[in-house]
Length: 184
Image 1 (spheres, helix red, strand yellow):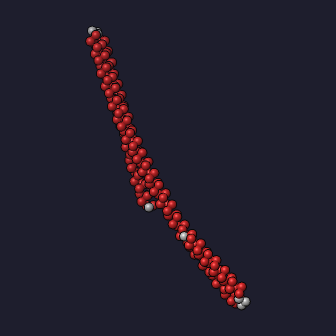
Image 2 (cartoon, helix red, strand yellow):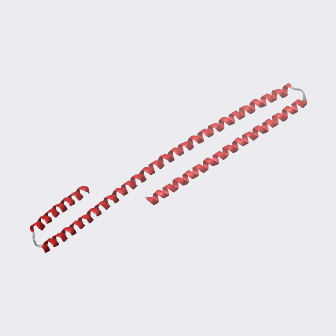
Image 3 (tube, one colour):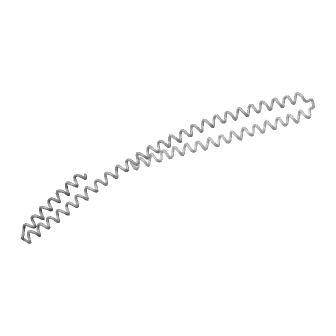
């Protein structure tokens, strides 16, 4: 494009020089005026051509920049979505492992406490002490049940939040795909 513009300028410059030589050679004022008018018209046409070519170049470069930016944003979005999905998988795995460990510790604790209480019951002959110990055992069992229920409720809440995050992610993904489709 630049070479073509340079050639056009050289050609016009050459033409201008030729016309100026003709003007110097001619003494006829009317002829000079006609030649100057032609020279002016040629100069205007040259300027219009140059402007037209420059506008075409600008449009071409701008559309390439838009396409490059869109591709870059698509790649970035894809990378970020993959990272989010990986984090969600990792979090779910860790949550499951932690829940299993917690349940195992609670079962172990319950087993140990029950064994201790049974030993105390066997060692004591006093019925009142046995009743107190059984009440404590019952209260401890209820407290452990409440604790287990509380932990399970926390886990359920966390699962609901995680599901909301997944839904929001899917919604954002769909929305950005729609936006990309509309802008593309």
